[in-house]
Amino acid sequence: GAGVSQSPRYKVAKRGQDVALRCDPISGHVSLFWYQQALGQGPEFLTYFQNEAQLDKSGLPSDRFFAERPEGSVSTLKIQRTQQEDSAVYLCASSLGGQRNSPLHFGNGTRLTVT
Amino acid sequence: AQKITQTQPGMFVQEKEAVTLDCTYDTSDPSYGLFWYKQPSSGEMIFLIYQGSYDQQNATEGRYSLNFQKARKSANLVISASQLGDSAMYFCAMREPRGSTLGRLYFGRGTQLTVWP
Image (tube, rainbow over all chains, first blue to last red; front, side):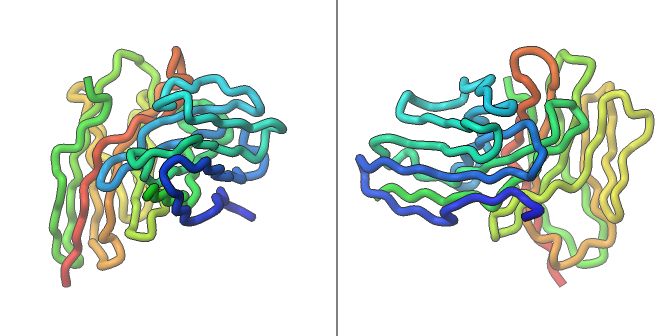
C-alpha cells in the first residue's frame, strides 16, 4: 500500500498478557519510529530504527517493551506482561531518512486497552 | 524543559474565518525542522506543513501557512477560510537531526480546534 499500515487496529488484553503490534512502513523508508499516545496527549517517542538497526530505544518505558525490525522493513512492538498503564494508542511512523526536512508519515495506530 | 509548547488546549472558530494556533519551541541546535500535524477523531496523524530553520520565507500549503518567528522561537499555524472538516486536534512538532536524538519528532500537547457553522 501507499501508506504506513498498522495491525491490529484495536487490541484488548487482560493484564499480564503479552501483545505484539505490527507496523508495515512505506516502501523504501529507511527510518521507522514507534510512538505512544495517551488519551488527550501528544505522541511520546518510544524507539527508532534505521533500516534493521535500533539506534535509539531510550523512550521505551520499561524492559517489558521490546521492538524489532529484523529485515529493515516490517517492525513489531512487543509488550510483555501488560499493565493497565500500557493502555494507549501506539503509532508507527516512517520517513525517508533522519533529515530535518523529512516528515514522518504515520499509520492509523493500534489502540491497546488493558483490562 | 518542554521542547514544544502549545498553550491553547482548545480553540473555536466560525466557518470561513481564519484562525491561528500557537506554538513555541526550545532548541540550541541551529538546524531543525518544524512540522504541524492534524489528528481527526479517527486517529490518523496527517502531515500539514513543514518549516526549516534556515528557510527565509514562511511556509505555505494551500490554506495552511506557518508564521515563523525565529528570534522568538515561534511557529504558529494559520488556517485561512476554516471549514467544518478542519475540526481536529493539531500538533506542533520539531525535529533535530543531529546529536543523540537522531531525528525523532518532539510533539506538543496539541490544540483541539472546533469549527462551527
